[in-house]
Length: 108
Image (cartoon, rainbow, N blue to C red; front, side, top):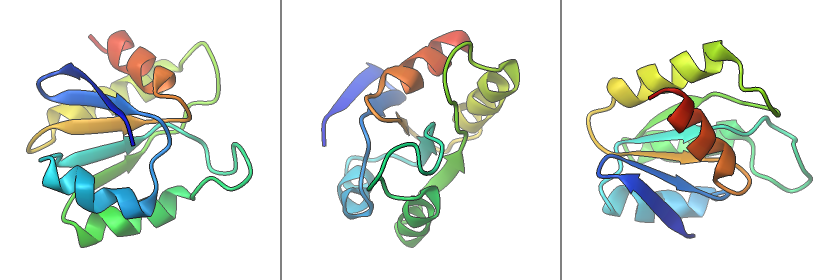
C-alpha cells in the first residue's frame, strides 16, 4: 500500500484492502473516503467490506463514489464535509489515487 500525502491532514492511495486498515489506523488516519463505485472492476473489495474493517479499527468511513469526469458538485461537497468533520487525518482512495486527488482539489 502506497500513500501519497497531499497535506498534513489528507493523503490519497490506490485501492486498499481490508487487511490494510490496521496499518492505516497505526499511521494515525481517523477517516477513510472511498471514491470508487462498487464493482468498478472485478476483484475489488466492496465498500461495505472496507467500512466493516474501518469500524473495527474505530476509523470513520465514507463511500463517495465517482465514476468519471466531470466530478459532480454534490460529490465534491460531500467529500469536503467528510474531511472537515474528521477528528484527524483523512485517507481518500480510488483505483489509482488520482480521482481522490482531483475531488480533493475541486473542494479547495
